Amino acid sequence: MTTLQRRLSRIRRRFFESVGLDYFSRPSLNEIDSKLEAYFPYKNGFFIEVGANNGFFQSNTYYFAKFRKWKGILIEGIPALYEECLLERPESMIFNYALVSDDFQDTVVTMRYANLMSLVSGLSPKSLEEEKLYIQKGMEWEPPNTSTYEIEVPCRTLTSILDECNVKNIDFFSLDVEFAELAVLQGLDFNKYRPKFMLIETFQKEVIDQYISAYYQEVDQLSNHDYLYQAKK
Image 1 (cartoon, rainbow, N blue to C red):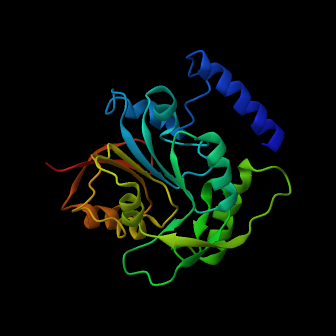
Image 2: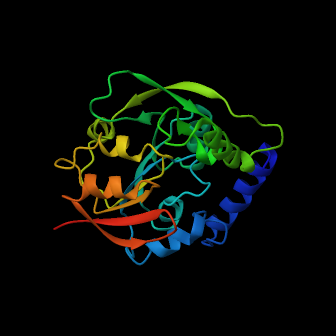
């Protein structure tokens, strides 16, 4: 989709939203936002979405922000996508960071741009050739001749961002970071912040299950690789 097409799409979507119609405002892949309504039938909730992309494409929180008056935090590492987030989601708190574990020592990481499949370099378990194919798949949503690139981005833990925002209660945490989900979770203090539900896209489910098992139980699978967890009481 070209820049002009994106602008026209945004104008059309906002017009429909202004008259209370959500026809163009459910961007989740595999209708995840619709499936989540069974768990979140209420207004004025609070979300975190990590791996927010441009704030709209495949967002699991866009519908709730626009039609259920939810507030929340969007976190995106790629600067160009972060800038688009600012346009798409002015009602949200938006941060331009890659999230890391508590024991990570550096202040920056290298990310590789691939639109919806942008990733932190070196965290993928795939071979270099498989990773290149994975990135090329992510470029399918870009205009012709758009290329991938590497960029250094600032990093911090999720706990530090929640501290800064003085967050109290979290209804929903959506995590989609292309193989970096364990590192992100290792940067979240569950004794201090425990979202009621977490939706995690992962290809390393056994590792994730083992890490969060003391705090969460799986309650649903919303796609081939998206798993919904609920905090244990």
